[in-house]
Picture 1 (cartoon, rainbow, N blue to C red):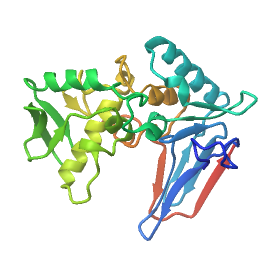
Picture 2 (picture 1 turned 120 degrees about the vertical axis):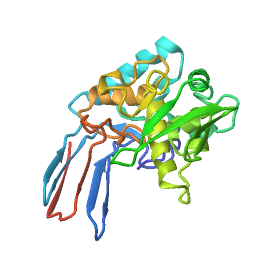
Picture 3 (picture 1 turned 60 degrees about the vertical axis):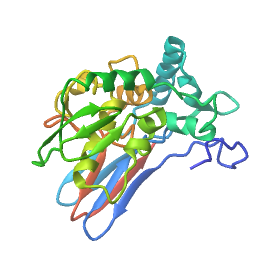
Picture 4 (picture 1 turned 30 degrees about the vertical axis):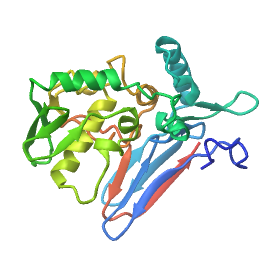
Length: 272
């Protein structure tokens, strides 16, 4: 993968794409991922074994459509969504990167892109749950945990706590209150994934039941949302657009584009 911020990289001006997989004694797990970027070279998958699962690639013209949506969003809200689009010297779109990859080189700087993007939304969420229960279903029969904001911290009945996230925390899903710490309890890890997903989809303020309150058609409706993820899903049949995009309401179709099989016989990767 080219270094996204180093034009001296010999692959910087090339179209590069990828999928990712883990093959061990338990299963083969594979997915197309748009967590970091979407490129002009679509990848599709088929995994055969005990089952037969296909993951569709981006359709023709999808990257151009994603770029057009983000350009329009930048004009609408003044945020640098258009700076996520990377082109070659001739103007051809090479890739569209996710917000955290635009933020990373400027971490801690006063002009960091999207620095305060989630601040107002997070404030609304924290004030709302001072007087309202937030109920998070861990799913898979693991039960529901209830939390409220006490002081500046969201506190759940099992003792799990979350500080108010900032923009870097939300977009990466792996910093601040959303840092994935191996020693944390399985309950906290389950809470983390569902709260981070609800922030990126901007459903946590409007729905106190997570993740089963909002339907898929209610994702990304707030003006403050992960518009990169919104644009990707609007123009792609399936695929991770942020790290916890595999959090799905019970009974709803998978959003993430992952395939796994405990007895795999063939993996086919289609490019183009």
